[in-house]
Amino acid sequence: TSEQTLSFYEVVGGEDAFRRLVHRFYEGVAEDPLLRPLYPEEDLTGAEERLRLFLIQYWGGPKTYSEQRGHPRLRMRHMPFVIGEAERDAWLRHMGDAVRSLELPPEREKQLWDYLVYAAHSLVNA
Ligand code: HEM
Image (tube, rainbow, N blue to C red; front, side):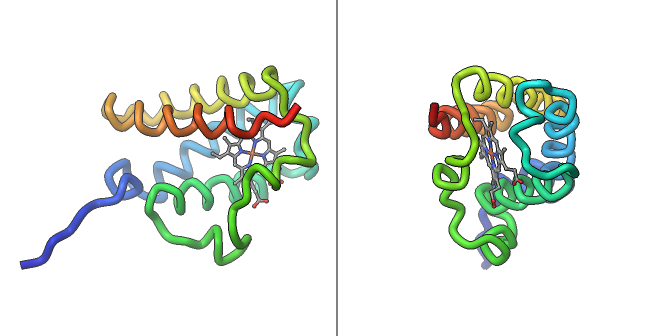
């Protein structure tokens, strides 16, 4: 017999779901007067890819993020950006829109959202 436990990544729809999540999120960031200036690159494609690969890895998908970027060290990597409560809340507002757009089963949506809220709170540095 073979035993198999699906990861959260697989359960919610694999790469496609994370692609849609992060794309929707960056559509919000692109229009946000508080957040947009924080992103150093003119083109948000690279930032979008890094966040997508990170979340895929975190939720049990392929480990491409660490192959390309090494250990995540998210708190350290966010130090160059001033992240206060206003920035955190704006980030979470766009992410909330993106999460809801996936229309996941309520329990899965909560699991994803609780993590993102926790992670965003942990990255406030100003
Ligand atoms: C990178 C802002 C929260 C994951 C970045 C960057 C900015 C930023 C400006 C640089 C963009 C780039 O990669 O070129 C913020 C703000 C947040 C926030 C204002 C509000 C609290 C989060 C959270 C996560 C996250 C909650 C994870 C759940 C990442 C990742 C990168 C990144 C993976 C790329 C790191 C790398 O490999 O260089 N963020 N972020 N961020 N952020 Fe955030």
